[in-house]
Length: 306
Image (cartoon, helix red, strand yellow):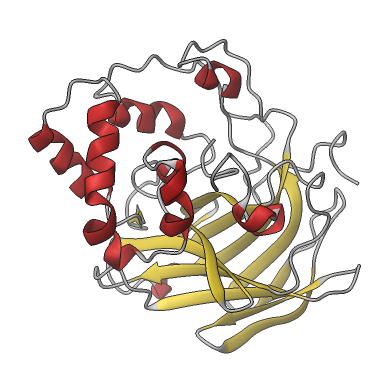
């Protein structure tokens, strides 16, 4: 799984799916090359493990615009505690949206303020993965576990003028009552490159500290995967994976590792890195329900929504 259930024991961080980041995406707006789309998905298997966004959490979308792996811009999204939730979005403390509707049905209601567009609510999970094949030692069957699953999505459409230099580093975090409990940059990092005891520590960390704190652990994972890396090669690969940021250059077509689109087969990509190219392809096609218009993720799967 990309980042679904990435706490020890394949559970959500702090046992709460509402704060479990599943995936992030960054790509150019299909109809306007001067705009970009930032997506943060949480709550795997929604709404079975959480029917609303967490009202005491802060969902952050961070951008490093000068290459030091420290956030220069942060969109902070919070949610009300009522059953009919609303959202507030701040950019470095300045309120962009207040009282924005949150959508828990099939209709996607967007909010627009100036150059920014915002959506939050339940949508079809765009991640595709043969989970059972992976658990069976990469004996892939072609069955997509996520074909009928939903997530909660936060979608921001922003002007490219926001990105002062290219590329930018993009990652997301969740703070619960002021403490960082979850983060995600590159896909599958905490799932396949860390051991159980390290997962909470990884989630609480910062990209600027990744090479210091996690290089040795990434190297150990690469050496233990059976792909035939030498220690020197594994160290070089760890240096490319860390700091854990999704690099995005809005002047170039998106596609992992430049940003990430819904159709990117990041499972094949990351397993190839883990195994030095020896992993078989999972043989899964991207979901056909994603959209070319805002909010870009498909309508929620009817069997899974409330």
